Image (tube, rainbow over all chains, first blue to last red; front, side, top):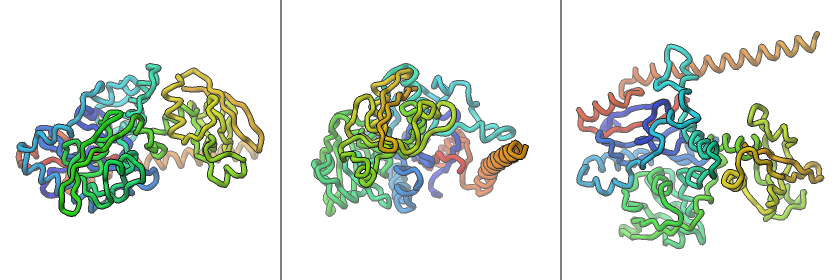
Length: 351
Length: 69
């Protein structure tokens, strides 16, 4: 750490979005950077709501630090290889440029006054991005709904204690078909030197659909090149339920309901097939726009078995995608729920 | 009368709890800045200062975006 100039940023107010592009659901994100704004790499990964440290470790952070120092040492000779790591053009240069955030926060925290209320949280940037599409009555695209996919969206599990080492490969997944093996160390992806799982997520976040990503791994001391073929809609394998920003998706698509797939036991009792829709209402929002489903008659422990005549199995994330890409604010969706053994027809307003 | 009193007491308690939570958070935000700056190693919430220091020393920047817990 002594070999770096360390800067801590604590709020998203006036954050330069032309530079700081990362997973805004994170509560800990790191950039390694040159003074000319060239980014060497990123660190910080999360895939669970409660356990914020599941995907990070001191060991992998130490490795990322060492790798960033090595990139700095060889800069600018290695500048070409870092090109893919640099921020992408963005429509909104600061959070304040988003219509839903405009004028709501000052550029700096108000330490002399209401300092807590003066702080814009990073997740509000993603909320604002999605709200922009919604307010424009446009479908929210996959890359905005499923930002910074975990490598497991491609069937790859990486060891949180290593830079980017393969811990497991899902059978029949895109990664297995590409030839990834347990123990492979990912050196580069799309030509970018990889120093963390966050760097892998950066490549995935910016990948097209479908895409072929060129990977270089080390296996048994040898460098091997692999081609990872990602099919159309590959991002939809991501689980976004853990994300803070999914709270606002619940407002838009479910009137404030939190949904959870029924367990095998619940399905057996309700006589629901494994491939049938069976989303149980885990929580009903109580206030404001999060109480819309409550006002429409939905109750805790209702089981959604039909939504807009769809009766096949969907996770909460999949249902939100369907609704947010196909139904616009003001529409009312026909929903059938199971409650106490009875089927009840309700209407769910979209927001 | 008893019911109204209970509701009023409950509301006051809730308001007091919320106020305490807000005060706690305010304290945490203020203390965070104080403690990090006192530790000396970190440049707190001042990116231009960090960039200037990195330019002066030739060291790379490590920028952490981290809310106050």
